[in-house]
Image 1 (cartoon, rainbow, N blue to C red):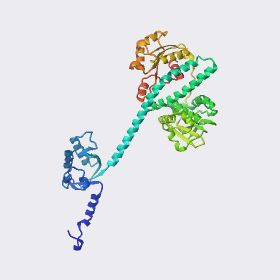
Image 2 (cartoon, rainbow, N blue to C red):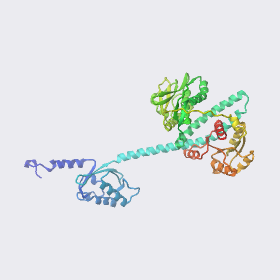
Image 3 (cartoon, helix red, strand yellow):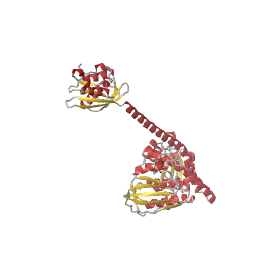
Image 4 (cartoon, rainbow, N blue to C red):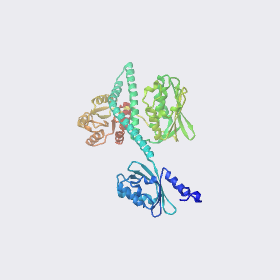
Length: 512
């Protein structure tokens, strides 16, 4: 080799050598193939990926290296390769990716992951750069594992809540029916007051179970909005009647502004959201008042619930909509932190936007934005009193819990109904014999003894009667998969602990 002293430039000083040295020093593997798929050049990093690196040299063909990988099973997986090692599939997939000069992800047997980026040259060859992405893959796998763990924990939470809720709902279901039946028979005002207080306590417990049920329903995907124009005037009046006594008991002033506007929504879901807002506002406000009103904001309507309670840090405005999140304070001990989470999920289903404005010591405003709609014209409908609708009606109850059967019979008798009860199909005939004619409606528990379900028993009874009978299904189940099943049976479904007024309203609808 000549030196500068001899008037010549050394090879080490040529631009080509500098380029080769840079490629050799790179952390990526590099290779060039000619138009005949023979190797022109590669760096040491590329050779290290093969079981016999000494054979990876200029002149070797690409398909020879593929066969080397097959012989040594050096590759564990590549893009488009199905699960399980198959030499023919690997050969075909690797050659296709190379011939098409497209990106490929390759996992070596030692666990390393490579991203292969191959491109055609103007001469018809291929230049390839291979990057070790093992750390990135590990991070992705760790993230995926964390996501799976979170999903499994959420599923375990739902199952636990479902199991605990079902076991606790059953006795509360019987107590609620008995209290309602007792209240209808009391004449002494002091006794009525005590019974009313018991009913209020049961209503509070029931609302907690309803929150758990709502979460299970949302998890199960059985909540589907029925969009329609919802006039706000009747809804606001109903909320005023419902929450004025609660506000007065705390010495608060509840102001509800009338409105002739309407929104595109689901009336029941919208009412659920606003009830949650009002309940929280009254719960957290110790003095002063709460305001419910509607105003136009651009192309949408904004429904506001404003209180002058303690307020909270605006930084918590998003956190309050998370499950089981509770604000500090004595009022926070009255709930389990699900109400606003349910409101948020319902609002998303309805395509409504929720907004919170608050400051510590300055109260809070919870708002719902919804699209306006034309208010429907209400037609006058003659209404029958509940007593007239249900009086003299023949009802059949199917429930395998004797305490619930006894309590329900007392309740139905108080409504003026003719009623009979059975534990299942085996004693249904005897119960039917006690009625003066076929039942006009059936109330059936979903889970019965001997592994039978209420829909199966109801079907057998209607077959024996030779005519369909309006049926209400009652269940204490909250597991998402069971909720989907029960909801799809085609019956009106009521959940334990049953509120007698809800049952009466459903029966009025079926029999009216």
